[in-house]
Amino acid sequence: MELRITFDELSNIIEQKAGRRLPVVYGGPHTVRVSYDVNVLFSSASVGLDLTVESVNNGNITLAYNGGMGIDFMVRQALSMAKKKPGGEMIEQLDGNRLLLALGKNGQAGSLLDHIDLRDIRFDEHYAIVEFEPKNV
Image (cartoon, rainbow, N blue to C red; front, side):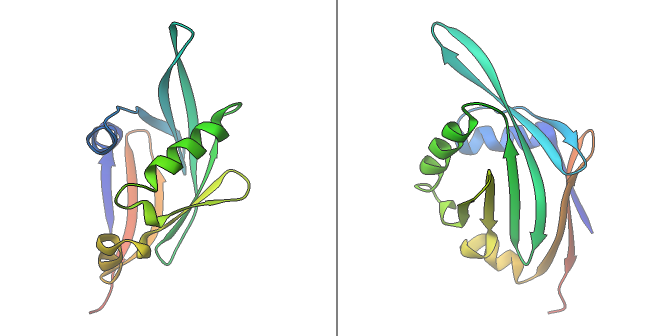
């Protein structure tokens, strides 16, 4: 089974949860590009970050990120803030510009995993596509 969400819908969810709109665009079959406007010396610059889904295994999603100079610092800052919010318990920074999202560590996501097997997360030009199979309960 598949769940499809448009990149615009995904950006809207991020804006509702984080208070800032982050445009999401297609970057490849397992990659999206997220951009963020940063104010630097009285002007604004757009910083891009590529997020790649490396693996999906037993409710654990491994992501790799790449965006160039300064991105590591910004990601560490964002993770520090995210860990203080609900759901932050499931985010773990790994070596080599990688993140682990352990969905089972979150009550709501963990209860969802009791009913489905998450298979893959991929992208096309318009959608984020989550592939899953219902469990026999």
